[in-house]
Length: 233
Image 1 (cartoon, helix red, strand yellow):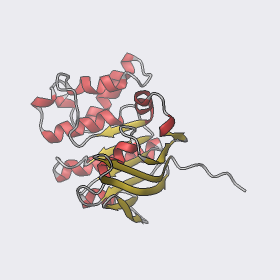
Image 2 (cartoon, rainbow, N blue to C red):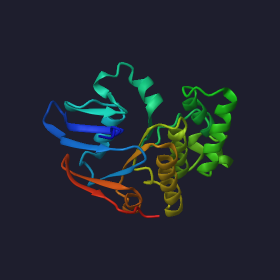
Image 3 (cartoon, rainbow, N blue to C red):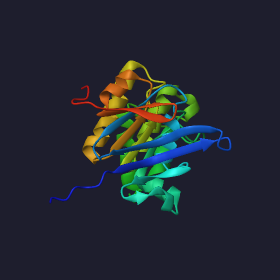
Image 4 (tube, rainbow, N blue to C red):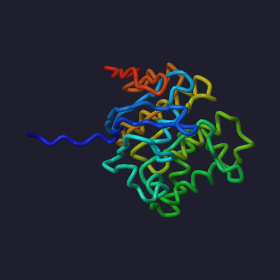
């Protein structure tokens, strides 16, 4: 029998409660996803999308069930920061750029853990800023650029170390349609060219349509799993 590679991501009967158990944010969520795939998490506000992203990125831990990334059970990871730096890129809904650093410095700081030489770090930062059309803003601190530019810089930072798992929470929420399409293209390109898994939580139907697969959450439960035969170009 031929060998079948394990999925990059395995989520098994995950539950998460808040407020001393009175609020159940996730209820027995299970799915698997492979490298090279773009996955959209959809559903109304409060359905559990952001909570699930936090569990996948080791920013939180489930009350029950388990999450496995690249063969590693996240419950057994002893150094979460090192694991995230090596395996996970995260685009937060509110960018989380360091306010006292320029956009270029924000990218360079993230690249410190990637094993590149200082020269390679500078080249990689400049490549990423160009990819998100921010070369002309490289020397500006976040407060001096628009919300959309901050979000694009956050995406560039997340792509810096070519993570195998890229998580994005409403990455096009503050972007116009043109920049939203560019961000979608970069997400898909990362999955295809770097063999990564991209998981995006979004209310944007156009972005969801660009993904290979859509998981629909409602009241913390997985109620739909749609594989698109051909994602939108």
